Amino acid sequence: MAYKETNNAIVDKSFYFGCDIVLFCKKLKKIREYEIAKQLIRSGTSIGANVREPQRGVSAKDFKNKLAIALKEADETMYWLGIIE
Image: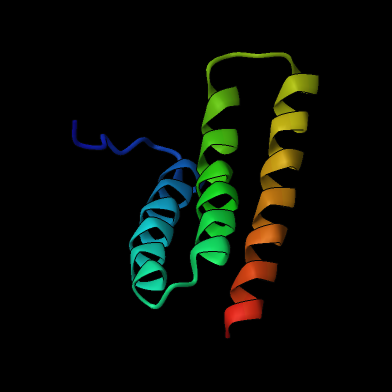
């Protein structure tokens, strides 16, 4: 199923970022960086999932909580990208 863009730039950009992370991790696996690839896949794709989830009419508290989780996952992703730099 193809991705259908939304009217929300953060949702769309975080989705495409997750796709880029997956492609990058395929290259990491070729050079046997399995553990870092695993961590990057987990944190890098979680950003978009946590940004997208509260778009369906949840409470303000749930909305803030999911965005806070997305921010933490983005920070962790930056950490792993820094490790392999």
